Image 1 (tube, rainbow, N blue to C red):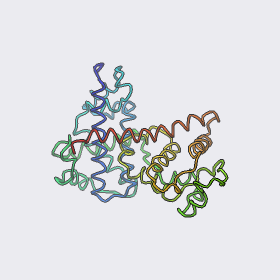
Image 2 (cartoon, rainbow, N blue to C red):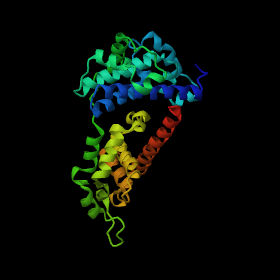
Image 3 (cartoon, one colour):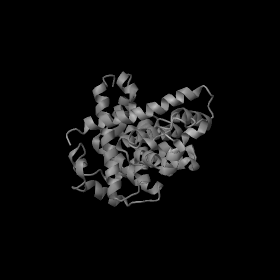
Image 4 (cartoon, rainbow, N blue to C red):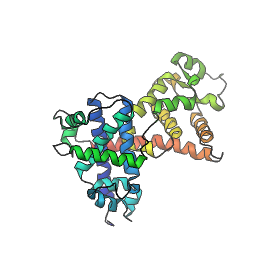
Length: 308
């Protein structure tokens, strides 16, 4: 296991990307809502983040080599044990876990699907790029999916409830600070030299365009879904970063975020997390870092799927 290399970890990360896309593809074909697809992606990332904490009697024999790889002293494995785990875990087992996440997410978000239907959509020869990637031509056995679902439940302590990003963002900035575009334009007064600078939480105000863009980043963005950031950072940091990502694509300057948004968001996050004031600067760095990591993931995805 000490021979785990950076190339192995890159390969494992690619398998996780494929697993996320398989889950999203099947969930979409089942016509499940976006919150269900987001939950499925979250469960997958959670598993790979916490793969080394899985109870000994929960992991199947096929996972022994994966556990050894993730536990390796190799620097590459230490940087990303989840990817090291995925790199050597059999592909049909990874696919089975992806489908288990879809099945479980449906039940957890009040959009249940029969396991038979989950498997049918996974086997669908028209399922697009998934059929041309690394997955076996036949979908995993039903028992593999059910066993994967139990493994996830045990890692979560059987509590798989999640809060959706759009609701967290609305609570974070304050519902009364999400303004219709024209009202926001008058409030922000971008480009007006005589406009008084906003202070404190006033800087958290968002145009509806940016708010909806941030919600789409979190609920529909493939780069966001594949990044794994959902299980690495506090929700307050994540929603503020999603605003930054969305803001970059807004062409209308009058609707963009107010100067000092990141600092205000960092102060708000620090207060909500009940952290000392000295954490404000670090939280601002985290917000910018998460937004940057989404872009990094996008570039990795472009490279990984460049043959499509």
